[in-house]
Amino acid sequence: MLKEHLEFFTIDLSTGWEVPPGYPQTFEQKILDGSLDEKRFQGSRTRLLRLKPGAYTTEPFVHEYWEEVLLISGDMAVGGQTFRPFTYACRPPHAPHGPFSSKEGCLLYEIHYFAP
Image 1 (cartoon, rainbow, N blue to C red):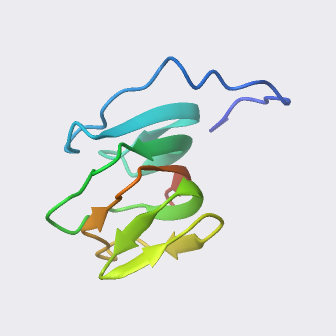
Image 2: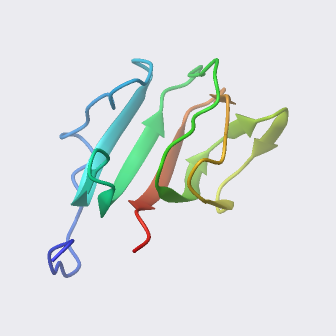
């Protein structure tokens, strides 16, 4: 099973955050469920990603998995355009995206997976 069966539960937003590998210190993730094995090209994960106020990246991201992103709160700028809550992106593998920045900080809900 790729993910465990979870019913509604309260997410503790005060603990469990970590800087994802390769990201600046102003980005933090909290894994909600699943596991993504990037070396074996399998699995899926659901996470929250938060950017602290003033966070930015300087290079586009490119990865081998599908990515779906929902901006929940705050602001995020991509390619000169600023997005606000409840905007959505779906990216196939190998699609360059970014660089990103956030003036006030933001919270993203993300799903990453490898297609069979």
